Length: 453
Figure 1 (cartoon, rainbow, N blue to C red):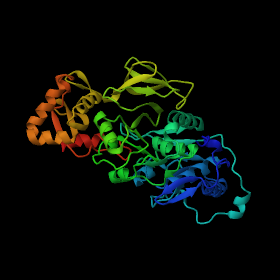
Figure 2 (cartoon, rainbow, N blue to C red):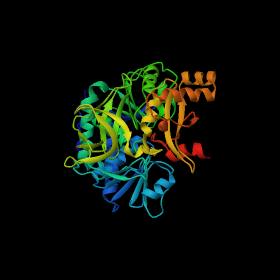
Figure 3 (tube, one colour):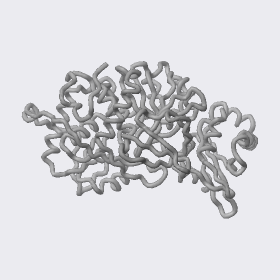
Figure 4 (spheres, helix red, strand yellow):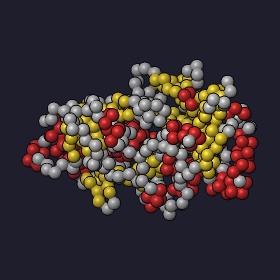
């Protein structure tokens, strides 16, 4: 197995120049090409007065070139989250410039530089050597699924600590695999799992996302690992002809039925990773039954506050002070825990507290339900819980056999052993997809609109 290299000395010549870094279809880019491309861009950026640069790339290889050139130039990096015009307008306010490869909105008052470079200053490159960098100022944005997106700063120490933990846990499993991904490098999960971890470990990664379920199936083989999210895994129905070496999923807990379906279709049970932009990784699991607990990452220390929310001490946040989360949990031991949802997803219905996360959990325990989203509906006359459902194949058959009215009654009856009457949904919508953003986070307002329009 190749040596696992730290970020700050990654490009200082310890890998053979021909080693593959990134691929697209039948073409690949080598370690030597990456080093030369980073050198060329570093020369340009060091000479430029702009200090804070946003990265807006569809191509993960060109993103990598820009990321490391900024590191070696001692510049600050901002990842906007996506390449939509409104997002860029909002998040480029504090940036001096933007590095990009796509046809995107470009503010007139910002320096912009498009990759790949049309010319490399070859004569200067021959004399140029990259130096280790010991500082990284990186800003990412939360998904905004539960409020306005927040800017989160990350340091070199925090990223490196998490990358080292990932390789310690799963490096032996992945070995010489190639990395395919459905998730963007614009967010912390994609940045770590599809770009930085493969680079440090010497595993080639795909330059572009897999977008369609068919692509996930056709790329399955034992020499490939898949980085993805519940959003796509919940929609798998057709078995692939081969199995992946490993599948990683993050963005939210995966229903047990979806985990089983993934194993049936893609040949391996997903490794789920639990965390956030703010916290980095917290824990992981592979579901062997509906009650499979989560295990904390080795470096995490956790306790519960008086509300039952996790309080963390983690090197992925700040090793010197605790971080208060909004995640309701049960500690099974110092090493294992159960997720009970978020404290901000507890609502009052008829003067009693209802956990929307628990409603969804109990719904997804029914073999008829592939996924569910619960939301409160507040009217002048009544407060109630509503539910949006994606049916499994078995659920579709039962819905057709029973009819919509009797199907709802059967669902309500199945929930009575778990939930009080005020927590059982009164209104239902059956959909093919639950509204969500490009990171698999649910769009609460669009879900609520299904019951109000």
